[in-house]
Image 1 (cartoon, helix red, strand yellow):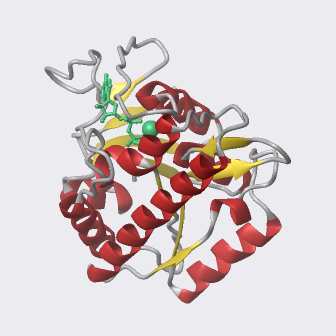
Image 2 (tube, rainbow, N blue to C red):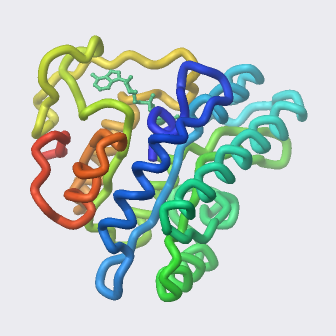
Length: 250
Ligand SMILES: Nc1ncnc2c1ncn2[C@@H]1O[C@H](COP(=O)(O)OP(=O)(O)OP(=O)(O)O)[C@@H](O)[C@H]1O
Ligand SMILES: [Mg+2]
């Protein structure tokens, strides 16, 4: 669940409640997780995380920043996270929060044994494990952990069949003005013009697309879809064909 979907990304600290309700409804409709198929949710920062990260010059590269910036950014993410889990619960989706610091190994490239156990136990209980982007710290520096990065760490550690990036647009367009039709099947040969939104510190769509190709190489099916359209989300979650989405192809 991208921050572009679950927040009004251009308005600081503004939740998109209706989008969250629709995502919750779609997940509920899908019947996931069940005994055969798991489901893991990850959400981004949108106008909560990115707003403070930008204000306090946090980036994916570790650096020294004002201490207050670390706490403000983490606190905003916790506030957003709390909205997310409450909204999902209102639609009957019971989640189990896994903190990014518990989930990720210090090198951020894969997930910890504890994190893996926490995911498995949640799913066995019928709870949907959920994590979110946040701030990481080293001995003297701070850096952003993006939701997209968590996604990669999970797919590197576990067998992930499908990754669905839910955003606020219908899929990937060739042009950043997003006019015309989306690209239904995106290969490395397509050219995509991307524009990064004002409150964004993690590389916007461009880095999400790079990640998509990496996830595809790890063996996952990868889709970009409009999370404001519950039917499209439910179709992808349940393995039905959905035409209004972008799929990464090799
Ligand atoms: N060619 C394009 N096709 C589709 N979207 C595009 C394109 N160029 C730019 N965008 C923008 O990319 C955004 C999605 O990337 P972005 O990183 O802003 O969202 P997100 O990952 O959902 O949010 P967050 O990073 O807060 O979790 C869309 O909201 C859209 O405005
Ligand atoms: Mg993003």
